[in-house]
Length: 174
Image (cartoon, rainbow, N blue to C red):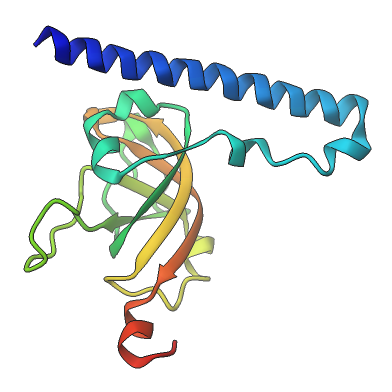
């Protein structure tokens, strides 16, 4: 049991070190913006530099470890939902946001089970641009974990792209 706790502490210490590094990098970019505008324009976006790639199940297991971090997730889209909207401790207004679910990756391919513990919230105006999205499409998203209410990760999705389309795979084109 103690080795599990030490591993968890080690993982959290590594993430704290990564947060400090991200803060330092963002400070450097801000400094460049103030003192050397011509160089700052070519500097990489700090949110891209400080993005942690995480598996959806890992995020669900350790939501506190990813709090306030920029994350990138790759998964299989399941469906849009209203799950998690208008919940006071992690409030996002259902008039402005919609949530969506990814499929669980730890079950047999014979079943489709959504990963309902992962609350992915996106602005409705971004969803309108995703008209080709279908259940079963492989997607990549970036966002930030803004809450761990109910011991679940709540993610504000910033970018969303379809990596491979179920429709394209079947018909050869979108």
